[in-house]
Amino acid sequence: MTQPATPSETQSRPDTMHAIEISEFGAPDVLRPVVRPVPQAGHDQVVIRVAYAGVNRPDALQRAGAYAPPKGASDLPGLEASGEIVAVGAGVTGWRPGDLVCALLPGGGYAEYVATPAAHCLPIPNGLGLKEAACLPETCFTVWSNVVTRGGLKAGERFLVHGGSSGIGTTAIQLATALGARVYATAGTDDKCAACVGLGADVAINYRDEDFVEILQADGGADLILDMVGGDYIPRNIKALADDGRMVHIAFLQGPKAELNFAQIMARRLTVTGSTLRPQSDLAKARIARDLAEAVWPLIEAGKLRPVMDSTFPLAEAAAAHARMEGSTHIGKIVLEVAGDG
Image (cartoon, rainbow, N blue to C red; front, top):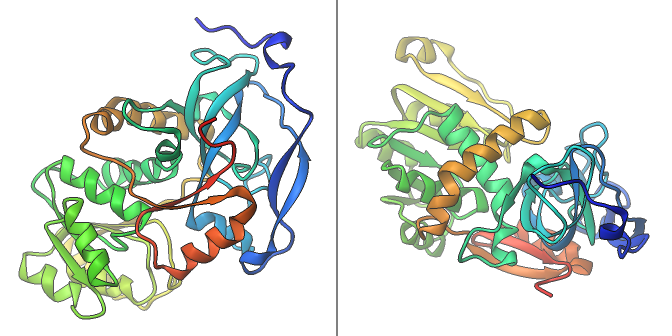
């Protein structure tokens, strides 16, 4: 059993660190370099020296003032990172200083050091480096909990994911393929559609040229839809579902409101649900981490699921990373290099 860190194991840490803060709510240029105190490990927490931090849509929402951190979380953006554990708090078992991990974070990833619950850490999968591993937590936690746990995807079912070339989309395609589903994905360019097919999608739909509703209806309808678009996609998704189908919402890039005829839901026995990850309890996230270790990490180590990397930016260029993400030209994940592999 691993014992909590002793002072000698943590004394080499500096008192301050470089970080990126949200100076005010607004466009990417509100992200500014700052010097902050290094966080301390609370009960059941570890402190990680960050090698790489993932960049995600919720970071941009927080920057814009639309996604406040939970009570007690860091106000710095950054919901996932990889690196080396440098301190463990009271009550922590299973981890010790020197362990290399990737972790889901309550916030604070855009910094040289970050504190997070120990139960939200996972080992670096065999065959992956720290850069790739930094892309795993946010997407894998989100996709597993919504596609498998909440959505109940089974082998042989028809699965539609919107935004197939995004970090969430590329992960969802690979996981659903590994589970034996027939996968449909939407994307906005032919290159992005080709990337989706390369990851295992059976059908990639360029939403600028084709109607996903017509395509799904012709194939019998989707048993499960993972939607991050919202807006006018909501009633279209209802039409694209098979009877007894399920729709899971994880974001609303086009807004959370739509006019919907609920008689269709009743008559066709549809299920409409959704979730957000960050506000969930530490215990709920720990359960997802255990599921990932048991079911998804073996897929990664077998080469059946890998993060799709788009680009890497230095920590100081976080604003440029956000601009690239919001430009929607990327395929896969964007990461910030903090300490790197050294």
